[in-house]
Image (cartoon, rainbow, N blue to C red):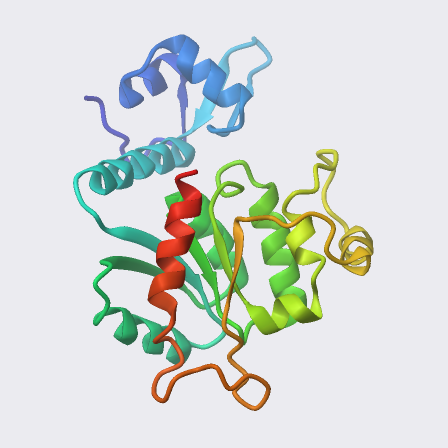
Length: 232
């Protein structure tokens, strides 16, 4: 199989088809659907961005790993590195085998989520509410992540019930604006979206439901619930 070399910035449709081992028609369809980043030259020849081909190859590798194992590939977006470490240490004791990809920045988290297409996405409660709203909105709109369950703190959902409706809203393809998001939030809970799953509120002063010990101890059954919803 032909490989992508560092000097390649873009490739022809035929080269792309050889790398992905698919037909020319499949590559053209992938470009039309936005699965590959492409454009046309003045002569009408399509060019494919090499980095988008590399992302497709990485997705395939992960899909093969998931088929040959019972591992869960999760994507965690955190505000602080120490929060991610707490969760990483907790999942070591779970029966469910979880491979956790971590991002300590919302933009990095969005890029990683699109690139690896995980089984579920975990949003840490300490991410500022405005960032969480935008993360949920963009993840729910992107074709590569819109069918992936998103785990969100229940306390955040109670404060912003409209986020559950945002993921089901089908607006035009124009860029989302803050005013539009705010309008949806003010409407409150319109349609319950089963792909947004709340985990017990992490503010212990408000919610005493956490057991004695780490705040991530109750997450394993919630991860399992999320995986079940992804398979529906």
